[in-house]
Length: 254
Image 1: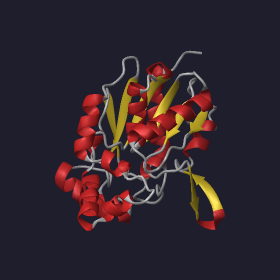
Image 2: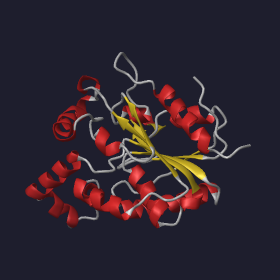
Image 3: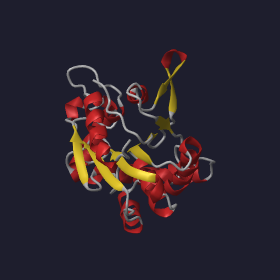
Image 4: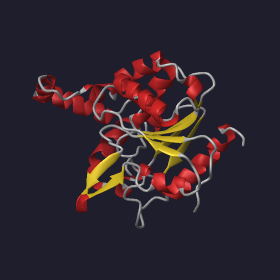
């Protein structure tokens, strides 16, 4: 399957801890968005990857995103496709850093717009065991964990209205537990108990944002092209093709 071709640049924004390039076995480098950038470029799309601090606050990550966007495309308007926490970074950048005229559309994939019970649980455990106190004494920035909790996200949403002129779309993952990556299954149980259908980290209810929300039968990792093979796999090419077809209506004409 070939990707639809858009006129405006596509910018892929990674989530928490997700460097644009991650080191894997056999001493080779692979993209956070596995195979996706190359597949998009093969159809003539201009694709850019950004890299923001993995564990920083949404505000700090948004500032770095803006800087990297400027270096990559100048003042040309772009389509942003953001996974997980990257969707919050992009929303902050658009609304609070006066970037609405530089963004045609924002599509968030598996973004916890209303926070995640997994973050609530992890922060509570870290505080109970004293881990957060150790982090405060270290150079490690722990703000990302706090920004993904449900109460901070509620405050973020009130303070971050959608910008006029930008099209906002979203994609939520609804993965069956048995088809979810093994390390995510306990998290899947936790989120399902509190918020229902989810991708192993983020519920469908939390991921929906903007004028239209599509649902993918994919866990949080499959959404970016990983572990998609086999009988319980996910057709990421078909999913991203549909995503780009939706964006064509917002794309500048030739």
